Length: 119
Image (cartoon, rainbow, N blue to C red):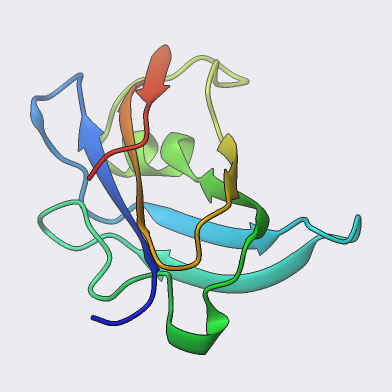
């Protein structure tokens, strides 16, 4: 793949499996007005089937991934309090290098999450 690209991966720490069926919204925040770019749903490996951004669409700037993790756990039959402690997990990050691969994974349970810049 030429140029940079953005990928993600969601892991369900509560059940020890990839998180299949998580809705993820990608939003650009660079100019101060949020702009929806894409919505994907994770596959059986907890990943999107294609990069969220790639090619000409992959630009330096500030972005946010909104992981709809509460809906995922509800669909699995996990008992959550009302309101859920975690419902939508926003991860705001910057892309500085338009030639690099940015991987933003999410490790989640109903009560915690973590992320990092992966490879």
